[in-house]
Image (cartoon, helix red, strand yellow):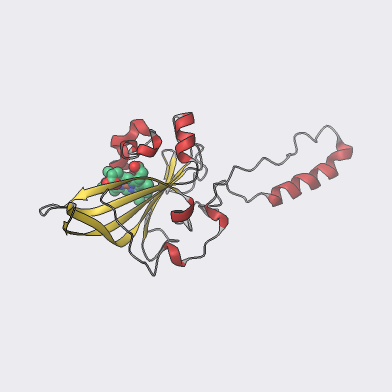
Length: 218
Ligand code: HEC
């Protein structure tokens, strides 16, 4: 395994407020709605009241733990402690020996278990890919690259229902965003098509490069 200890960071995930928001959020139950009430005019007022109350209790959007109401994602807080490690990639240096980048991929809790059971990623699955610069040197194991500076994160959120049709960051079954290391809450991605071209080769596995993730196959 090439990836060694992550460097200490001052401006990244560790520094913004940890919360329970990394837990996957179930899609909330629907409110009773009016259609059950209409035949019974005497109950209408009560039904209106209960429908209104139930609506007010809903978070208002399905993936509240990872997205705001408009579909803007953020890097999930505390994912290194609460997510599962999926796998890592070493991008070979163009000329020299070793890797010029290391990618480390995490998934929201229970992703491995669900994927093995269902054969696909359930809605709400969050994938986080860290991108690191590297340093390469001779060590007692050979020529070794290790992670240095974190450049940022790629985040994908599974969404087969197309929950945010008005947002260009969501499409083809996922929400998509890149975050620079100093801005884990504000994406620089404008449109998921920036991502899609490169993920087409993985279309048959739901646009995810599953061959790099032994956790999904165990
Ligand atoms: C230059 C091509 C390219 C672009 C652009 C790209 N990706 Fe990827 N992505 C890949 C490849 C190839 C992998 C797996 C190998 C690797 O990491 O080097 C990957 C892996 C990932 C992973 C880990 C899960 C997986 O699919 O294996 C996430 C998450 C991810 N990309 C998100 C994104 C998002 C979000 C965007 C757009 C903001 C994006 N990517 C743009 C090529 C790309």
